[in-house]
Structure formats: structure tokens, C-alpha cells
Length: 263
Image 1 (cartoon, rainbow, N blue to C red):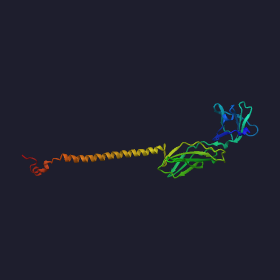
Image 2: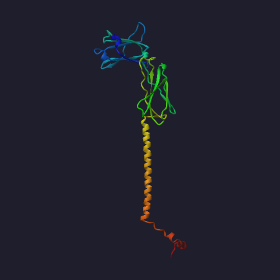
Image 3: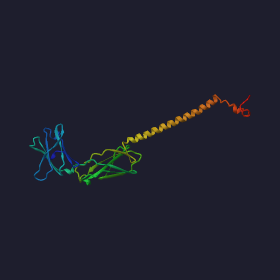
Image 4: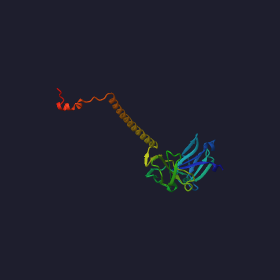
């Protein structure tokens, strides 16, 4: 019946906090429902009211509460709690969304990179480390997945800048019934084993090199033109105003005999 037909979205954030949401305006357009839950097993369950509601236009459309165990039962009732509209039992650890990887490190050796992160405290066997990368010339991301908590890839062109990011994934269906991954760790940029602020740095450095070389060539060209003009001017000067010979060299004998005294 309706108690099992209602669609809910269940997320267990790193096995620490539960978030359960439903389409309140579509499912319960005429009333504001209440939510309760229990992690107790057996006959004597203690049901707890929702501590923090998620609202959609002032309608209760979800609940946030602390994860307290692996077995969870939830109940949605009408506004005065006289009628149960939905109930469900589930394994909370089948809905885990892991935290993003911590302390991500990149180790480069020639064209090969190995990416690793800290090992989570629990359920490492259920996690895979996913690496995605692309160069500024690629349209699509390339992906590589390996056991937590290390993944490697090779064949990187040392002349290209690459973007990298990593996340943790839960195994489906062995550990999760829903395909949840962590958020992506912050994107990083690498070129030939060197960390950059962005792949634009690569373009800037190349353009700066081109500008410097262009300026040097321009200076050399100006010096060459100046030398050519100087040579031409000297030739022109000799043609228009020929050099007056020094009499000392023309009358060398007289100078030598009389030491320049002609009296």
C-alpha cells in the first residue's frame, strides 16, 4: 500500500549523520507531516522525533539526525501523528556516502604518477580511490580506479599540463545498495611533476618566453640596422668630404731633416 510506495532518498554521511528526504509537496500537498526514527531492535523500540527538519516552502521534506547504529526504522505520520503514512526498515550502512579523501599526495617518477590518501578509520575494504585527469587539450576526463588508498597511472606527456582530482567510492552492491561517492577533492594542476596554480600558468610562461625572445630579437635587429646606417654614413662622409692629407706624411723627409722647423 501507500506505506511502502513513498519514495525516499536516504544518505548516511560517512556513517555519522543520516539525511532522509521525500517530495513533500507532491506526496503530502495538504498537510505538514512529522518524522520519527529508531535504531533500536526488538519489541521495545524507543522512537525519536526528528531533531532537524529540512524544509521545502515551509513543508517538512526531510530530516537530519545522528547515525546511531546499523539497523534503522523510520516513520512518517500526519500532522497530529494519529495516522502512519509511511514506514520502512533498512540497514543504514548500505547507504553510506564517504567523506572526501584526506591528505592526498602525488608522487611522480618520469611519466608515471601515484596518488594516495589517508586510510579511513573503518570499512576500507568497501572503498575504492578514483582518479580522474585531463590535459588542457582533452575534452573528456580519463578515469582510473583502484583499491583504497592508492591509485597510479602512466603515460603523461611532460610538455602538457594536466588537471587532477580524486574521490572515494563505495562498492556496489557488496557494501552499498546505492552508488554513492564522496565529493571530489580540490582540483590540482601538474606539469612534468611540478605543481602549478592552474594550467593557465603553462600558457602564461610560454607567452612570457615568446615576449622576451621577441624583445631580444627586436633589440638585436635595431643594433644591426644602426651599424649598417653607421657604415653607410661613414662612406657618404668620405665621398662628400674627402679626408685632408696630413702634411707630416707628405713631406716626411723635410720633417725628419728639420724637425718641423722650415725657417
